[in-house]
Structures are given as C-alpha cells and as structure tokens.
Length: 408
Image (tube, rainbow, N blue to C red):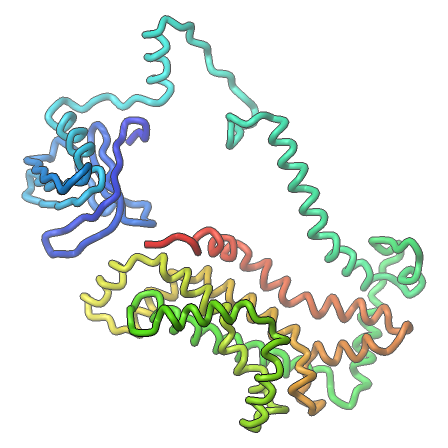
C-alpha cells in the first residue's frame, strides 16, 4: 500500500464479540487495514472487492462511525476522528476497478508535465543520506560535534585505564601522559597482594558487596514495579497525592535523608547489618517514578482483554506487563546496581567482616603516595561493573528514554 495514496485516521475498532481496540485505520486505493497501537501487523485487513456494504453515521465535526460489512458477513464498527474523510475515500474507490498504485515520483512527474516543466532525471548518489534536504556542510558540522562530544565522554575512562597500567615513575611525570609508554599490570597484582594481607579476606568484601547489590536490586525491582502497576493502571483515593509525594522525594539528595535513615535503623536495631543498606534501596523513588511513567504507555485494552480471558492480577502483572516494560526495569536495575555497588556503607556498617569492597579499596587508596598505582587499579575495579552492565543494556535505556513520554 503506497503511503502517498492513503488516508489515515485514529480511532477504535469494535468487533462483534464486543472487544474494542485503539489504533489507526489506513485506507488505500485497493484495500484498507486497521493497526493496533505498537503493532506492525494489521489486526483487520480487507480488499475492496470483498466489500458488501458501508454505513456512515456522523458523530459531530469530522468524527464519524463507519460500519463495514464484507461479503462473508464479517462486520466491523469503526469510530474514527477523521471518519468523514475516510468514508468518502473508501466509497470513491471500492466500487470502481482497482487503481494502479502510483509512487511519489510518478505523481511529481505528472504534475510537472501539466505545468510544462522539463523533467530532470534523478541523480544517483553513492551515499544515501537520511535527511536529503540538509546540506553536506550541516552533516559535517553535526558529525564533528558528535565526535568532539564522544571524545570528551570517553577520555576520562581511557585516562583511568591508562593510569592503572602505568609504572610508578610515569604516574608522577608532568605533563601526565594519557596512555603509558610501558604498560604493566603490576598495579593490579600489588593491589591483590595488599588485599590478601588483610585479616579479612578479599573474597569476603566481594561477597558482601555482591549480596547487598543483588538483594537490594531485586527487592527494588519487585516493589517498585508492583507499586507502579497499581498507580499507572488503577484509580484509588489518594493515588495521585501519593505519586506527587514520590516525585517530590526525587529532589532530595541522599545526604539529606542520611541522618533520618540512621535514626530509624538505630531504633530498629539494624545498624551494622546488611539491612541498613538493602531496605533503603527497596524504597528508592527513582524506580517507582520510572516504572510508572513507562507503564502508562501500555495499552489498557491489553490488560482488559487478559482480565476477560480469566487471568488474575498477578498473572497479568508477571506475564503481560513485565515483559512489555523490560526496557524500563533494565534501566532501573542499572541505576540500582550503580548505587549499591559504589556504596561504601561506612556510616552504618562498623564490623570489618561486613564491609563492602568499595570501602576496602578506599582504605588502600589512603595508604599514601606509594599506593598511587594501586589506587588507580582500584578505581578501575570500582567502575568496571556499572559500566559493563550499562554497555550490555544501553539499547534498552535508549528505548526507555524514547518511550517514557508516550501515553495511551
């Protein structure tokens, strides 16, 4: 179906069974099709040769209700915002012989011939540009700006990795080289030797951090997703006020809430336990805000159809909602992992056997100038996990940013 010779209108489709679907009806010169939101394949499609009758009821303005009856007695009722235009277009073509589809180029040639203009042969370019109406200078300027921004963003990471591979004499050279002339892994080996001399094994620090990160992220994901599902798809007294309070909490820094949290956990006798870090991660407002905004973009008829089919609320949440908001909860996991992995927990955990990896590495960094190389190696280990998680899920993050503002 050529997009040049089509007419579209948003609206709803009602089937004989009573089910309703929100989407777009697209009518061409030989056929028509109805597409549900975010679906590439049409839900209903027919060619005009199958039409038996069309009825039109004007709803006001350009809106209209169109009933389409096919020769096999199939019946579809459309309520369209531009129903009058669509009805006139389909009524014009369905009784006639199928029209030969025309491309945009054919139509431009026809109009040029009517004006008596000379038709120029199209130029064949070796490189097909996405925006042909933009100048080459504009493209070069945009690419140059993107390259400069990319260099500024990747430079700190390259310098950090280069510093971890520098021998001690190159670390204090001025001006400092970006990349070492004689790369070495001695800084990492010295770091593990120093960690091995501690009375608490290095594996213990690592196990503590992994446990806190995994449990905190999983709890944050479950609680924030369930709460967001209720706020996004159900109306109850106080729901909007509750979400407004959550949004307000986003403005407060962790340093502001640190003292109240310490007093609360002190009263609950949870100081110097893993829960002092895990429970605050469960209630982080960023996850609830992100999931709620993304779930609002899910089609409500999808949930209603699952309810009619007999699915329970938990089944709808787990089997329908969560798979469709995968980009959002992957993004939320990255934020949670980054916050928990980099948390030194020095204010709420005192026992050395319960401290995190970041705290242990920071103690090594405080060892003086002789441990400068070990400090650079420790920084690489600290930032490695959040960066790896981000690299493997960056496509989902971009999809979240593109879809978070779309509403049903």
